[in-house]
Length: 185
Image (cartoon, rainbow, N blue to C red; front, side):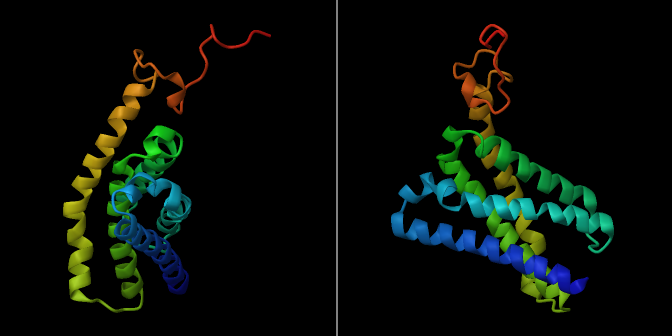
């Protein structure tokens, strides 16, 4: 099972490092223009990596990974909801700068985490990487929450289910036509 988990961590590391590197190179090449189309350029790989991360919950439940279930479940569920419900389903959110910031923070954390996991599974414990793995989240998780808050508030404002005074009913992913606008059979 150790080989399987190593391969899983390697796949996640490759995906997240590709996203992270792509974001940095695009920013260095195109400047601020690259921030607005981050989701369009790396969104597919980001969605694949986040869907693959659902396996981590299964790893813990089956007992092949000794991580704690509750924190991992919260992290994965929150990312899936933010990525698929808020960002992927709302066109106006996809082009915002905050999506780039959020993806940068997530991938920075994941590149460090999966690197640490791969080395730990082979019995290598590099002290600076261990310190970075357990300390980086103290700084980056609050920044990630701030970025998500900046992203969610405008989305909540435009969603008629959550805000009855909203002017654009089609922008809410949970919107269903009201009885007065639905076709009669």
